[in-house]
Length: 468
Image (tube, rainbow, N blue to C red; front, side, top):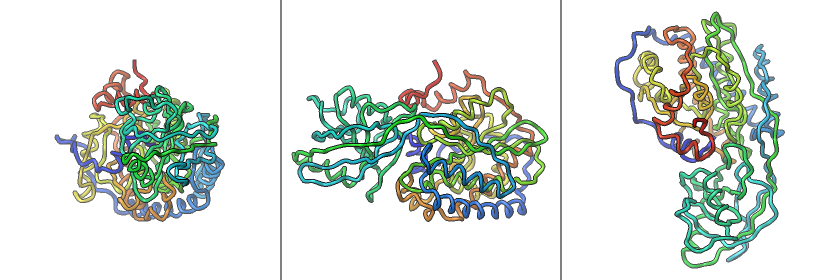
C-alpha cells in the first residue's frame, strides 16, 4: 500500500534512528535453535520456488481481477499440497478494473506517453487541454490566474495525499492530473488514488519521470504543451477473500502473522508483496505437525494496495478474542531491527528476544516507530499490539516495486530464506514464552498511539481517521 510518504520513507530510507534504550525484562534468553533454523531455511527455499510458480503463472494480482482470483486458487492448492486446510474468508470491497489508459502529447509534436491511471480513476471520454505545472499539488502551488480546462503536472516526490491533490484540482477546474514518477528509467508507480474507495472526480495518471521532466523543461522555456487524456479504467464493487490458516494451540491466545497477497497489475508483484506471501508459506510449512502453546493464525490479505480492505475485514471480526500480537510482513527483507510500532508494552519482550542473536544479525536492535498504511494499522485500531521489522530490500531490486519490472528475478531466494529464519524465531518465541500475555488496548490509548507520531493529519487527509 502506497500512501505517499508512508511506504516511500519506509522502503527507501533505512530507519536507523530511534534505537530504543533501557533495561530489558528478565525473560529467558535462550539461543535460537540451530535445528529449527535449518528447517525453516528449507521451508524458505520451498517458499521461493512456490512464489516463482505463482508469479510466472498468474502475473500481477490486482484485487478482484481474474488474475487475482487465479492467485487465490493457486495459493490454496499450494497449501493443500502441504497437507494443510486453508480457509477463504470472503468480503466485498470497492474495486477497480484497469482498462486502456492513454495520454498523448499533442503539442509541440505528437507522441504517446507512458502512463498508468491511479486506482479509482473513473473512465472518461477523451479530454484535451494545455499542461500547467502545479508542483506538489498544494493549493498554494497553483498559479494565481485561472487553470480551468487545463491538465496539471505534479512533480515527483510530493508528500501530498492523492485525495488532497484531487480536491485542489477539482476546485480549480482541472481536467486531469499527471503524477511524475519518482524513479527514472521509464518506470511507472502504480498506486491507489483513494484510500476509501471513492471514484475520483479528477483522474490521475502516473507518468514516466523522463517524459514528465521533459514537458516541464518545455514549459519553463515558454513552449506550449498540450495533452489529450483518456482512460477506460473504471470502478466496480468486487467480492474477494483473505486466505486464513490456523494452527490451534493449547491456549486460545492468538499470535497473528499477516501479509498482503494482492499486488498491482503492471508486473508480477514479487517484491510487493510476493515476498510476504512466501514468508507466510514458509511459516506454514515449518509449523506443520507441531504442538503449540498458543494458537497461530496466518492471514494472506487481499485489497491492501487499494486501501487495506482485507485487513480491515479481518481485524473487524476479532471481537474480544485474546490476541498477543500481530506481526505484519509487508516487503520485509532481511531484518536489521525489530519495530514495536509505537507500543511501549512490547519493548521489554523485544529487547530480550533481540539479545538472543549476535549483534551482526539484528545490528540496529529494537525500534519503536509507528507509521500507517499497511495491514498492521486496522489491527492497531482494533486494540491489538503490532510488530514489524526494519528490513531493507537491496536498492537494485526495490526500486522496481509497483512497476512492470517487479518480477521474481528481482527477489533472490536468499532474501526469503534469511528473513524467514528471523521471523520464525520471533513467532515461536511469542508462541512459547508466556511472559507477554494477550492484551487489547483501550480506545483512548489507541488514539494516542497515532497522535504521538503525528499521523493524525495524514490519516485524516486520506479519510482514515476513526476518532472524533
